[in-house]
Amino acid sequence: MNNASSLFVLILLGSLLADAVAQVNPRRPETQPGSSFPTYNEPGNQYGNQQGQIISERVMQNLRMFERVRLSELLRLSYTQSELEVRSITLLASSIRGQAQIDLINSRGQSLGSGIVRRQQSEIRIQLPPRTRLSELELSSSEEALLDTVTAEVESSYSPGPGPGQEVQPSPQSMLRLMVNQEIRGMGEIHLKQLVKQQMGLTLEGAEIERVVVEASPLMYGRAASVQVELNNRLVGPAKFLSPAQQRLPLQVNSMEEVRTLKLIVRGDARVEMVHIRIGQVRPIRGQGHGQGQGHSQRVIVSQEISSGRPLELGRLLPYESRLISRISLEARTSRQSSAEVALIAFGQIQGSTIVTSVPMRPMIKLIRPMSARELTLQSLSPVLIDSIEVDFDSFQSW
Image 1 (cartoon, one colour):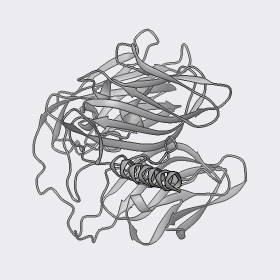
Image 2 (tube, rainbow, N blue to C red):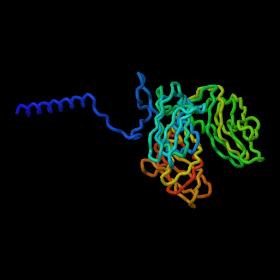
Image 3 (cartoon, rainbow, N blue to C red):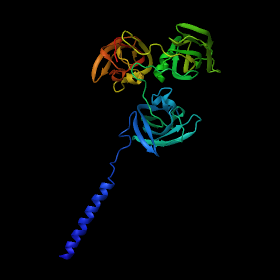
Image 4 (cartoon, helix red, strand yellow):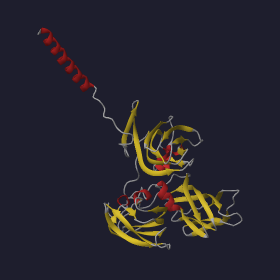
């Protein structure tokens, strides 16, 4: 009986000791890779005594074999934000077939880390050397892969953009780099001011332009193609012809006018890859803000097909826009059917719709009530190619 009592006391003491250890060191719950990605401004992991900030973006983009994609563009950062120093990059991706190696490359073409992904979605985490900037980083894949989410832990605090009614101007003497990747046949124009707003979140209002450098080439050998700058609805300087031997063509502007409109005029058949804008002096914007009675419109190049399961989020096209949208005009056409309905959806409800056909057209959708770009999505059950959209903002907004 004494032996049985002693055994019972030992078992009881062991149970109490196990409970005490569990309270001191609780078991951490298991998590699946990518199941809980942080969002903007959420604190990251601590290294030493410093606290990082997290930038995360659901990109859902295909990486073609050996294509190099800039990380700052995937994260949809402005020109200023892309200069943040980054500690680590986390990728959630899968291969289209077989397996793919995804490399993180710096501006010198050196690999800073890599990982293997297969058809089942997996996570790659890459620690980076000190003082690495986001603007220096690119992704490359050995095979075609689907990139789901990109997450960066940065050193300094991150702000997703200016507040309502505020405009951010570029720094004086800075160089702005625009990705265009557009083919033009016959004659066309590229709205540079809108591209700067769309890609960098900056306004050229108040800025002077020193020069524009165009990276482009003619589409056909022996067929002439030229480019020229249009500033404030007036052609500046002579037209210059493109040549396969010289794909970086500088166009001197040297204007002391503040930018109201800025376009690149293309004549002939050409492919424009990239445009660099050299900023001169920058003056503060007078009366900054969007008060009542100030309706504005903005044109955005899209060049994307929408269909069932492939909607177009306006918040991705206008990530820094805070004004309310009253209507949009589409440059669109069907790619397979004779006609299709395109609708603007918000909170699962149709806010307006229009019919497009195989003939290029410019229909307009008027919203039931003004809404922000973050709330709106363009959808169509049938494949429709959206070349561009022009957004009209509400004239009677108060903040």
